[in-house]
Length: 251
Image: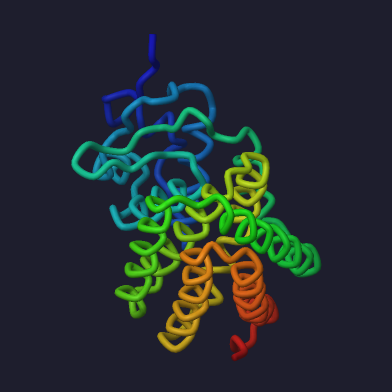
């Protein structure tokens, strides 16, 4: 029998660890939900409580829960179905709770190395995707890029659309191990990705870089896709490192 979340607000609050009193509510909400969803108390495929119920149980605003669920959707933990609700996916990596914790603890040297690792994985994903992508994936990538362009002044929404673009591209590469590795890397660097984006000009530059990747994918040009992704990762890496150093992101 499927195991569903408790419907009683007090029981749910207890299962989630009580109210949150933190200046970084979204990060803490994400950690709590991830622990809860992957802890074996909720069955894969179960419909999760509404945002309002989760927010009340955690003692935070609905926006914090919404952003946390968006992050978990990007990481492949939950499936958000408009008009239906949010469901726990069945293929959640056992490494995700660990990697999210690591991401909160990594120092600057390890994060720099992780940025280099991400560069290689994303380039390989683009190269493979160019030879394996179908028209439906191209359409979804186009939609994610359109959302990025529409959210250039709404940074949380922009970051979510950006991560979904990369998630769709990795899925199009049709290599399950590569996809799982990229999911783990995204969970480690997400907090730095959010900090690295600070103005609309950077958002526009990122859109342009994603557009070049998408153009190459439409043409099924593996070399061009890999080159465009490498250029994007170089640019994104500079911004991430600048945020690590506490300085202004570089052009």
